[in-house]
Amino acid sequence: MKRAGFTNRWLPVLLLVPQLIIIAVFFYWPAGYAIQSSFYLQDPFGFGSTFVGLENYTDLLSASEYRKVAWFTVIFTLLVTFFSLALSLLLAVKADNILRGAKTYRTLLMWVYAVAPPVAGFIGIMMFDQSTGPISNFFKSLGWDFTLGVNYFDTASAMVIVSVWKQVPVNFIFFLSGLQSIPRSVREAALIDNRSGMGRFWDVTFPLLAPTGFFLLIINITYSLFDTFGVVDTLVKGEPGNNPMTLVYKVYVDGFRGNDLGGSSAQSVILMVLVLALTIFQFRLVERRIHYT
Amino acid sequence: MIDITTATPNAATITPKRRFKWNVALDHLVLIVGSLFMILPVLLAFTTASHDAVTIHREGLQLKMGDQLGVNFQKAMFEKGGFTDTVDGMRMLTNSFILGIGFAVGKIIIGMMAAYAIVYFRLRFASFAFWIIFTTLLLPLEVRILPSYEVIQGLGLTNTYTGLIVPLIASATATFFFRQFFRSVPEELVEASRIDGAGPVKFFIDILVPLSRTMIAAMFIIMFVFGWNQYLWPTLITTEESFFTLVRGIKQIVISYTDAQIPEHGQALALAFVAIVPPVLVVIFFQSWFVKGLTESDK
Image (cartoon, rainbow over the protein chains, first blue to last red):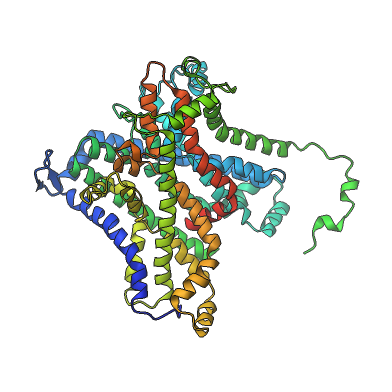
């Protein structure tokens, strides 16, 4: 750190203390507690716990239900990430193309950012209602008898659609600001070299957007894994039953409905490792991006 | 640089007629369809909230406005509902504002203080403190919910505003954001104010805070929306309905409304609409700050 700054013994400590206390009590303590209790088997009535080593983990990984949820989470994450990125890229390219009304479109396309996931889920319930929902009626006219909350595949489709709807604005904002930062000179040069709009997009614009795209890829994976909790919870109306659920939702269900502290903590630790890996990957990408631009 | 169009000033007059451009029309078409995709669901929720329960129950969502809008909003906001009949819409709206504003203000104050200490002071354990704080960026609350809940319960903070707000502040996004910004402030400012005899406190309050105004506004908008929309943590920590926020209460309210003989979807939708409006207005009206805060804080 290059800064000259002040020399004062107590003031900086005083300034740091609130932040440090909060993260110690509400971050490090729970995180440590999660790791510790993932090695213990909790008595269901709360009378002590026994050390069981890695048993919670091996139980999890051999349970077919956990593997099923993990697979669903992977597919769900891939679908949500792909569709929300593709859709918002298309919209951002179009919004960047036009001259008139660009600002209006930007507003119309981004405000959904502020809608809370469970509220989005609730609107989803109305839209996908078995007898009166407009979307399920539309599907019915195509011969698809859509039953939300009953059929596994239908419920999963609704989850993907609502989650994509909720995520398009963020991606749109980032893609648009990425597009707008491409220098005019580059665009004009491309215009001279290549007359076809599609060709220009794939040869010039797309590679220049790649850093934004990689960054958004991580953001979207994290979103699909964690922030969709509210969507999942409202769409299944709090009754998991046979419905699809994500890994985070399972941590909640096992921990709070099943009172399985050890198993839930082991799942938490697995997710922590996953997020850690994703974040390290992201930091390396960001470093590279700063290098080249 | 010479622009090609200025080289031929009468280009517009030479071209006989402006032809209809199909690709421009297509661009607009895609954008309009996209906008409709974003708007229609919420618009339908609003228009449907203006109908009475029987109509909605029988015919589903309504695109036309009905005449029950005032009645539904009135009942949703001022009649006690929920499972225990102890909470009305106003109470939940107030709680949402307490959570949104409390979270945003708390996070900004604590983040600015910590960032100031890290950037402007020579500290022996500065890099240690830095890493302790920034590790929190790695693990979202969602992965450690049960242990966090146990800790809060052990401290007796369930069903309190403290328990609701403070644990959410335990992540370093604001600190990181302000650290980046403080580092971009010219160093000469510190030296100049030191020569003028300003101490660290005076420098912070009289120079750095006013300089950060835009940053604070951008951060406030992002954090307000983030706090307002919290769902998982409030669900765990508030079990008394008088502490429910709109977003936290939505599932319960919907279930208790829809369990009736004729589900009160109109009122439920009215509440959902009230939950949507404040953060959306903030985002729309302070759009440029919001976009700035979003694209710069996530880097």
